[in-house]
Length: 143
Image 1 (cartoon, rainbow, N blue to C red):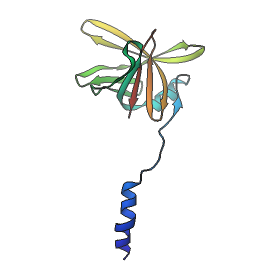
Image 2 (cartoon, one colour):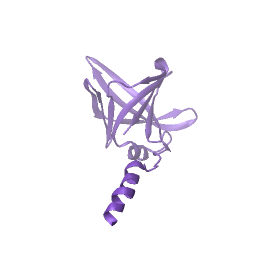
Image 3 (cartoon, rainbow, N blue to C red):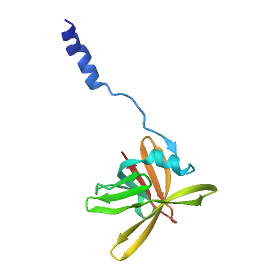
Image 4 (tube, rainbow, N blue to C red):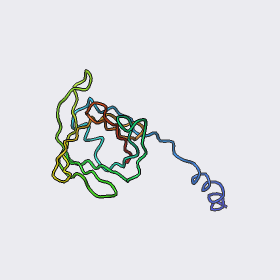
């Protein structure tokens, strides 16, 4: 009788009921480097790009990812890795706030590019990185 009760009543509820657990939400742009690294450490998959020259929003189609670990960053997509380097944190201004920007270099052929981002926030589990340039893009990632 007890086994039948579990199978008929409890199992369907367990399979159909979802835990309502909201994602993490935290502002990061004005936090210390250690706080930022604490929250962003790990692998993130890019879901979309918005703003700047891209316009309203562009959905990710190349399986782009970014990995943060102990002040290192790895960036890649379906075509391979574009960066595997050390993050250089630079104290900067963002509007009227004093912030730490995340900077790293990538090499493309003979050219080097210095990429600068404001680690803006994590909203409902979605990481937002803003390019630190005029009319820059915002990049959105999930774990």
